[in-house]
Length: 243
Image (tube, rainbow, N blue to C red; front, side, top):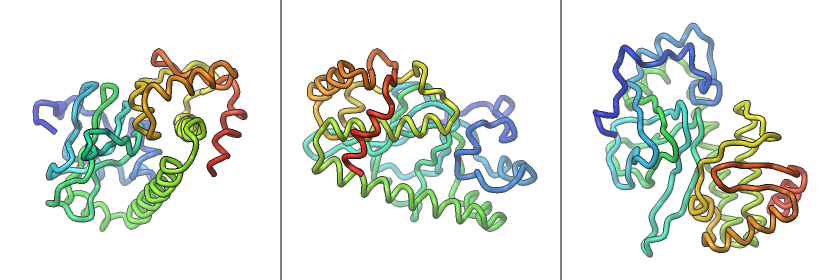
């Protein structure tokens, strides 16, 4: 991440005022720990929509908590196609590695304007020593990511496309709801048709046909950067075909 993206220290937001903290790695603990956590933060970075946070093969200096915005984690395959691995929302932790100094094996691009909080490997180690509860939280995050990878492998490789789309949208809706977004109303949805298609392993043309079917059945409408959930139960029933 380029230095010119760094938010000036005097205008950085405080951890005390961060709504994303309850979803982040830093969720455990009480407010008494926040000044030390903020002290260990290397800075905050603004990355405009369509910007690269890092590319596959980069050597990272930091791991990042997404404070606000939407981003996608992805890999480029040998044939030039893109596989979206994860849609990152506020609170998600990205760029964490077992061995810093080694190339990262995926890339992250912003979908909207995003703000990231950066932590060096040394700062993370200091926090883990000071607050053992953060170690448990990190294990939980890694376990959940592994579970998501197994689920993705199962449904991207074998399931019918409409069930893949239904499960993808159901999981995303659940995550939005946990962040206090009322999905019974129209929701701003910045993912493109290509982003969704690359996440579920189909072509954008095939996705258009599935989207038209789901819209015609009054289940969900996902276009023009908006999401309208008409029948969440029906969407969950389709998604349950894969679970």
